[in-house]
Length: 262
Image (cartoon, rainbow, N blue to C red):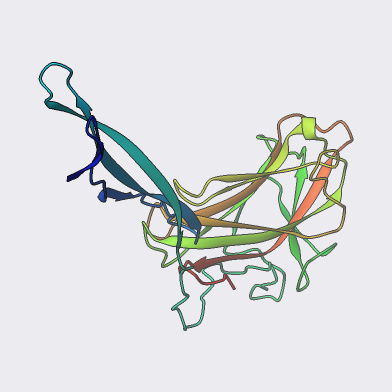
């Protein structure tokens, strides 16, 4: 440090100033494990400067030094981008569903739903198949004791704990299900594979007659040879009369991260 004389009675103290970076910390971005995402974190640098001021004591002529600190914080945005998973599967997909389009024939050449197990009064129909000659039709209310119907199939060679892609197509062919009727498809494929799809003609997702819609879910098998079920039911009897829906082209494939389902 140095003093510069301005007059016999006055001194101006010219202290050095320092500016140093003493701390740096970076925010850690969070990345979703199921899908690729991009996040922005904050990177902050804290600068502390120290300034000394001198004053002349009237009685002792000693210089009394005081120290003050000021902080200068600057923030910059650091963008972190996480790359999307790359599909590494190059083989052929296997559909674990047998008779997925309900077009099989038995030994006599007659249509059969085997190996599907039918509960209630679900029936094969030739009225409006999506592909092939037939689809599976549900009605509500029906004549079964439960008032609802479902079909079941054991998925041979599926493994407990493994992830799969489950897909089916459905169409409304008769009736006017309202949102208040709570008509829906219910599907089950293990503890992590229970899903519902409500259908109605009077809400924001109003469905049209004779148009196939696709449902796709990612499920985890709870057991080896996991059993899959697809049912249809309503909470109350539809005010607009009986409701009929059809499903077709059911599939269950292995899930591979980053790959599109077939």
